[in-house]
Each structure stands twice: as C-alpha cells, then as structure tokens.
Image (cartoon, rainbow, N blue to C red; front, side):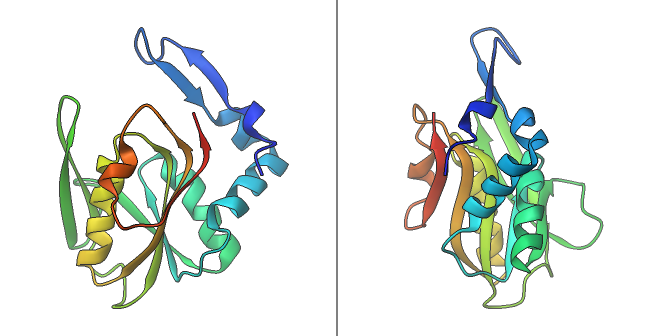
Amino acid sequence: MTEWISLIRDIPDYPQPGILFKDITPLLADPAAFTAVVDDLAEGFSFDKVVGIEARGFILAAPVALRRGAGFVPVRKKGKLPAETLEASYDLEYGSATIEVHADAFAPGERVLVVDDVLATGGTAAAAVDLVRRAGAEVVAVTFLMELSFLPGRERLPGLDVRALVTV
C-alpha cells in the first residue's frame, strides 16, 4: 500500500524556519503512485459523495469521487462559494478560520467520505464533519494521505472512522 511513500519529499524550513514540509507533488506526478493513493483513500468504504477540503484535499478527493462513481463536494474557505452556504469556524494556532459548504450539497441521509491531505490538529476536518452533519448527511469516514503523529488531530474527531495512509 505504501510503496509510493518515497515520492513524498521533505523540504526543510518551508514555509518558515523549523518546519519540515512534506511535499506531495512528486507523488502526484507519478501516475501509478497517484492511482494507488486514490484507490487506498476510499478502500473499504461505501459512500454517495466525497468531500474535499480546500485546497490540497480537492486534488485527492475529486479523483476518489470519480473513480468510485460518487459526487464531489468542495468545502471552501469563507466567501468562495456562490450559493447559500453553511459555515463552521475553528481555531488555528494563531487566530481562527471559517469554511463553508453549499447548503444544498447533500441529500438527507447521504453517506459521505471526507478526504484531505494531512491530519494535523484536526480543526479543519472537525469543522468539515460538522458541516456535513448539519446538512443532513452521514460521515462514513475521514481519510488522509498523511497524519502528523506529533499533533493530536485524532482527538478532534471522536467516534469517527479516521484513516491515514501514512503516519509521519
């Protein structure tokens, strides 16, 4: 499952000194590796729609939806969606942020897989889960390409099936 892990490169001191950034662009550029990741993110789940969290979550969630014959729903930063929205705010290390989803993105009872690139503190993912539930849909799982083991992201997602393909 993780033969593609060598394609994730470390970029030291990006975006600021002391940060070791995990760059997934080499993985995305490799068709076999990208296909394997897309397949692995959804394996074992049954769902009607896939939520992708802005922005890198879009890159992973849209092909998951396409490959599995499901709909794709973007969860975006506040002010980026044109129709009526639901919004959820969450705390960041310095300040807060708000994400939105179209209010009519889900039919009641639809089963939704939430996909993002990295599970760090879990705030964004928890806010996305809240939006899906408030819209009347059911979250079947939250999946990530990577999980940062030194941060407590899973603690923000209690009672959910949380999967990361690789833990760093």
